[in-house]
Amino acid sequence: QVQLVESGGGLVQAGGSLRLSCTASRIIFSINTMAWYRQAPGKQRELVARITRDDITNYADSVKGRFTISRDSAKKTGYLQMNSLKPEDTAVYHCYADLTTVSGQRPYWGQGTQVTVSA
Image (cartoon, rainbow, N blue to C red; front, side, top):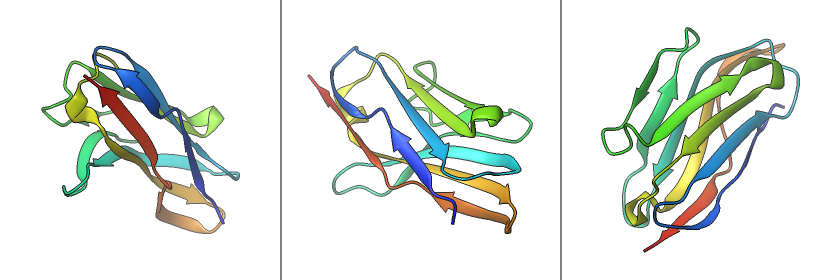
């Protein structure tokens, strides 16, 4: 069973940067769509950024110009570079990936990583 393992979350001051990583735990054939979602306390989960198999990206308006999504298929890893962080970026960030493996194509979710931005 493939798992998505996230890392890179933590506590940072406003204006700082963090890079989140999301790595597939087993051999995969391809990363199709990969995305990052976040959920703040008392709020619904929202899409932050997404990258397609053709490297087409899209971002939530609230993070445009500050966050960058990318992926390295050889490393089975996706990234979310977060710059100029704001307190309102505080949330649990979840990685999502549509992967093709020996078992076929299906979506996977990471366990979530906490990002806290202090004022």
